Length: 288
Image (tube, rainbow, N blue to C red; front, side):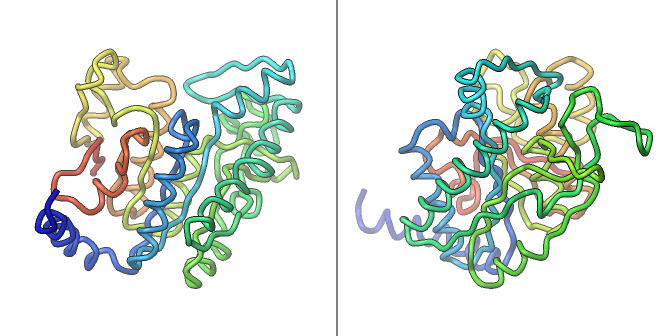
């Protein structure tokens, strides 16, 4: 690549840098995209770059693979319903340890090693939840156990950190009205937080290249998706497993005022930068 080619890259990025200065982005990071330490480092470097050019970035992380390994080591079996992990008390203890005492601090440490400023924000101070699937006001746990869905979001600490140019690193946990700690699907938590912050963009970095028209064909990425398209894909059974809560939370975030939602393959080097700073973009964009 010649110096002139490198200059063209910066010039292509310029209007996006100008447009998104002081904008808020919520980036959800999870899945197998978090399993490769070198890839994690590249992704977090991209997050630091976004903050360095004036974008306010909130990172909310999952940890499914790491949680799965920890549960296996503890001899605890796992099961899923529509992409949500059934969570009993023993499983909840492992999830809290992995998210809050292992992954969260590790992400903060790596961001700071790359020159950024970051702080861990425990989700239990952000999200108030009700048990997932529970409709009656005082009916105990839902069918999935200690799995919650946000009732309300307290974004004060997150907003104060953003004002200080600090990247909040948020875990997807919340307290219920019963005082218990609940596991929140990280995609759902990201969508709720993005809506509460009125984010310009919500970006899901995952381990598939957006929404696929054919789940067996990795090249069948749908570039733009509307609620009508989602209904059709869901009826056909195309949206299932972990993709279902992603898309549902993405549409809820858009209805709450988020500008755009993007589903990207976090295993693609610099997928985040390609989506934000180039004309072509990658993955799937959801719009109303």
